[in-house]
Length: 413
Image (cartoon, rainbow, N blue to C red; front, top):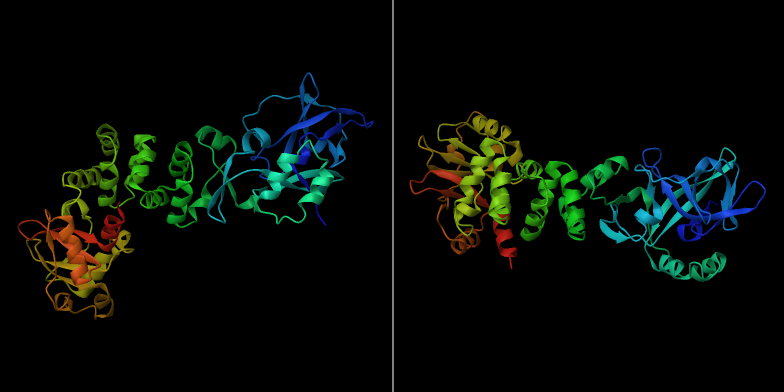
């Protein structure tokens, strides 16, 4: 059975030299993540007038009876920017449980004591967050560790496997030095990442969003409340904020920018690619509660002369729209809306046939760019729509409102 040791037991542990004499007590321990993500690399020893550093390979054995050295060539402790101190930097700090998709505060740590090449090494096994860890903290230094272990036995353990923990570090330079990555977060659903981000403080939110992949960051931001979106982006460098917003649909990017102070929004807008900048700037000109303010100017449309094969080729050129694509629109030579083809009909049709005959039998509902929000909601409800085309006064197709847009509106307080 693997021997375990808790951080609350490690701190204060007597350190013995080669003759068994006490030379001090353990005051802290540290990882060097670039060397190993879980092995304790250094022990910080307080010997009264000075702090000394003990390397992991200078330890012969370690347990509740103390830490025994096999090498007495100790050195004075100096702060190391590549070192993560457990008491100073981790204890009582927030940590992300990637597996459970939650944010917790660290109460204690559990180590495995492993025999390696004839000496003991400590490896972080779990981050403890439950009642057991609170009991150990309260009783630390008051009740002997062996008694505490007996008292805690009836209490169910509550912990997070260290492999699923992600530290939150706002300082970008320190993140690099400590080899802290948020790659594991990127594998979660954006809605789960958004829940995690919302549980963090302002600096930590910005750190997460600015560090994860820009596409994932954009999807995550779209799941966060507008006020918090603005707060996160306002703290970010305009260039980075622009890169993230460019991964959003133009209407979503415009919605986010509309929540920002005018100067901050302008700075971000100026750092966008020219085409995206133009689209977003045009959307910002529309009242937010109008069809123009709700629509996405990106959609798929084909001419009345197009074949099914032409329509499928157009879809392949706009794969970024596939997640929400339900309809392909038909327009005439003047870009005026003629009708709509359900996507399923295109997929089942012969490629050589004309696309126009596949249009829905009934007339395609549409709204003008100035239509009010309440009237748009009525249209979605009345016709049970998934998408609603938006046209200008001449009937030219200029955008599409999707059911997702309407759901977002209905969720607003």
